[in-house]
Image 1 (cartoon, rainbow, N blue to C red):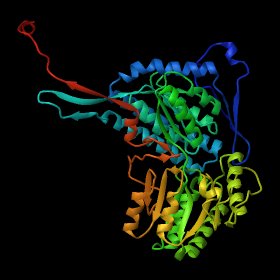
Image 2: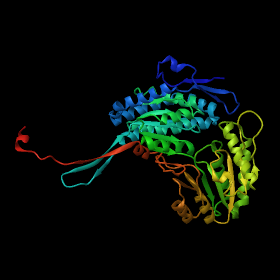
Image 3: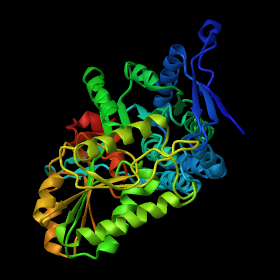
Image 4: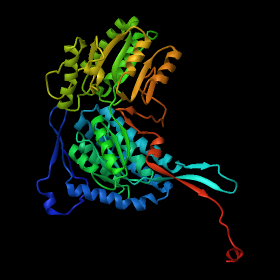
Length: 482
C-alpha cells in the first residue's frame, strides 16, 4: 500500500519554531479503511506567506499578455495530462471514487484548462457608441488574488475550472482543496504550479480551520467556492468585511418531475442515473422525485430493479461513500423518512463489511416534511412522492430553499416550457438528467450560491470592467508645431 504524503505545499517559511508539532490530516480509504494519505496542515506562518507570494506575483502576471497567459496555461494542462492516471489513483484512494470516473474527472479537468487557454485571450470588453469623434469602451482587468476552495467529490475537474479561469484572466490563486482529498489537491497544485511563474498558483494544505484562516487574510479579491451551503455562507459573511467578490456553487436539492406522458422504464433509468451516479455524491444529483400517479407503480418497480442491480455490482461500478461521517448522515435522512411513514423499497441500511459502502436506496410514500425531501442527502437515495398531476409536481418542486438545478421528463413541450419559466433554479434539464452544450454557464440561486461558476462567463466573474471615454484634446498652434 502506498501512502501519498504532502507537506504544506511549498517551504513558505523557514522559521524552525513554526515547524514544531505540525497538525496532520490522515485520510482513510473508504473502500477498505486502510490509510490512504497523510498530509501536513499548513502552519499560520506558511499560510500568510503563501498569500503574500500570490499578492507579489499579481503585478507581473496581470501585465502578461493574454495570449502568453493562454500559452502558459496550455503547457500546464499538457503537463498535467502526463500524470492523469496518478491523479486518478490518488482520488480513488482518498474518496473511493470509481476508477473510471476518477480518470474521467481528471481528463475533464485537463480539457477545461485547454478550453480556458483558448477562451482567455479572446475575452473581450465592450465598445459603446458615444458622441461623434469620441471613443467609449470597457476594458476587462483581473481582480487580484483569488482564494479557491474546492470540493472532494470531483476534485480535479472542479478545481481546474476555477483555477483555469482565474489564471488565464491574469489573477493569481491561493488554492485549498478539501481535507477529504488533501493529497489529490496537493499533487494537482504541485503539477500545475511547475508550469507557471512563481506565485501564480500557491497551494495551501489544510482543513476547515485552514479555510477559515484564509478568509481572514487581507488582500484577497475573490472568494471562489464549490461545496456545502454552510461553508458558502461563511464566505459570504467574510466578504462583508473584506469586500471580496464571491463566486459560489453550493448545495442542491434537485427535483425531478416525471410526467405521465413518458415511458416509466426510461424515466426510471434517468432517475437512477441522476440519483445513484458517483454514489449520489454530485451537487446536481437527483434528490427529490415527483412521479405522476398514472405511471407510479411501473416506475417504482423499474427504479427498484436498477437500484438492486447497482448494489449487487462490483466496487469499481458502484463505489462507497466518501467516509463514515457522510454515511451516517445519509442513514439519518433515511431513518427520519421511515419514522415519518415512508417505505424503503430497496437498500436503506448500512451493510456489514469493510469500507463505507451504502446501497442504492429507493423510498416510497415520501412527504415534503421529511429530511430526504427538504435537505440535500448527498448519497445514493431516491425519495419518491407520487403526485396527482404535472402541476402538483411542478408546485412541489418550487417549494425549496435551494436553487441549483431541476429535471423534467415529459413529452409535452408546453409543460417543459412552463417548467423552464417557473422553476427557481440555475439549470432546467428536459428529458436528460445530465448533459449540456460545452461552454454553458448557469447561475445558482438561494442556498445554492451565486455567480457564474463555470463556462465562458466565469471569465467575467474573474474580472472587472473599466469604462473609458476618449475624446481628442484641444491643442494650440505652438503644441502642434512641437
